[in-house]
Image (cartoon, rainbow, N blue to C red):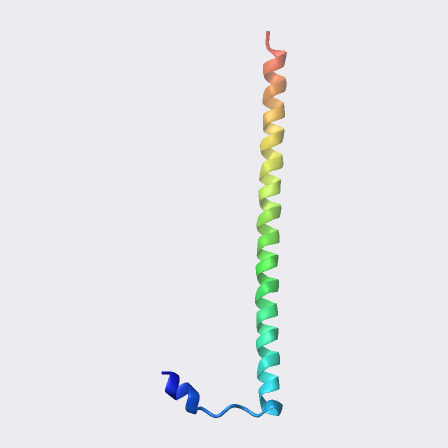
Length: 67
């Protein structure tokens, strides 16, 4: 496998630049999508946590109001 790679000709710099730029654009897009998905998950978890905290406070109030 190494011998095959060693024999392949390298792309000239003026041709390889567009592929490198394309690879960076794709990598940046993937990272951006990942961050967006994580932000949506985080907001959903925060909403669930707030709901649980409200339920907990309501149940504490009910317990303290009972004799």
